[in-house]
Length: 464
Length: 134
View 1 (cartoon, chains in turn yellow, cyan):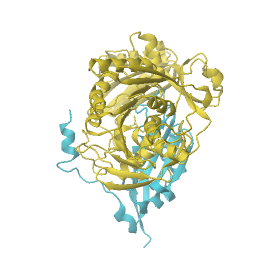
View 2 (tube, helix red, strand yellow):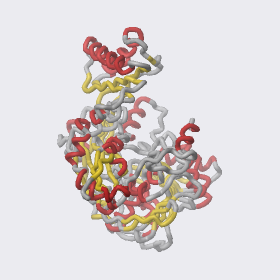
View 3 (cartoon, rainbow over the protein chains, first blue to last red):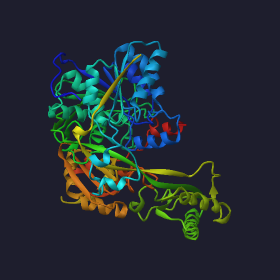
View 4 (cartoon, rainbow over the protein chains, first blue to last red):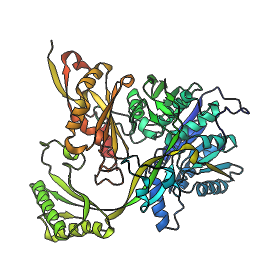
């Protein structure tokens, strides 16, 4: 990795507003708002975030079982087909972490899609290097969650990847890439990279980089800042919640921003939606650690400057840490899960008897569960112990059983015993005929830290 | 007049939860700046944890975010081991932010006009819209 601390001497930093749109907030996100942003957002950049904490380890598990799995976002074709023609026509650059465990494969696929569309000469960069599975046990001594040595994960470790920052993306942009597809890169870094590149911000300018990362944090969850995950009828209403647009950041060179969206879309951008997103998944608001910087949200000022337009100033940061966070995915056994139903007068009493029967049955068949829950949906399944004791008795109760076990054989017992309830249970038991294996593998996720210098980004280029 | 009225938190504040590992953060935002001191004074970390009874197994930290008129509660051990290990139906804890809306707050008479009250659904609003959803 080159020293990226200096401002790019060969390029005049832009002074006009930079427009960066969101194209996805997670793997399962809707595709059409990305197309809307590409067509109508007048964007300089469109950024896609598709990796949850466990995405890489889940992808590794799938790759072992399914040789046809390409190792990158399974919706890559859908997303790219929706945006490539408009983005390439308008000169909008694309930054995406859809590469998962195979950024080179993703870049090749994007190149192939471009050729299919007759778009030639586009430079696509693949940023890899975040995977450190082979050396994490020696580089990262301690598991953050429990203080144990990482060596205790030796037999179960599937994957380990460091969260890289914006710098390799900036380098790819400097080297002429119009599309950059990465493996594990911290979510805000995807949005920060174009700001650093376009405005010539030094990686060590912690105030600017802090502002840019704070903006990235507002953008990374897509519709969550434009009114998604916000409506509560009668208290917090938003218009057309079936028609959300993903946000657009209008960024100035000083690190201030207006959060906006395309005209005519649903949802709302208000002080409330922006505040909620600002603290989403944040612990200490004065010290939000990313690979690029430590973001400080406590001096941010928010201003509603128009319909669906909120200006944010005062975002800043502190110097970055000497370490990078590592996510380690481990096999941790299985979960068996099934459901059945009661309705009508006395539904809850029948559900309670059914629970008693199942508890006895699990003893008889010697279910070896590390943890188990039997929930009554509609009564206590969501808030558990925090459910008010005087919650009214429902008309309809779904009984859900879930147990975590060491082996798949043990997990299968959950579904087998629920099957038995069909004719050996309680009156009026509603039961679905099983049509699938009701078990799944558990991928536990642990965190650790490695020295920043131990992670070396690699950039490969492909031309359509 | 020093009399107060007890109301649910949903009239005073809006909330959002986020997940990281086995930790949930639940941010609580006063609808009006004038209501924020009530949150600071009454919604302590201890009360927050007690409200959730045994549903939160670890420590609860509270950050005061004065510029946003918000409190950020960081609840360790709130997600049943974390997204992939959790046996909870709501394994991301996305709905956790709703529970605290049932917390009771004492509001002085002078501030009652700052409260949000849940409005009945309008004919053009969500009630109709919901019925039209697939």
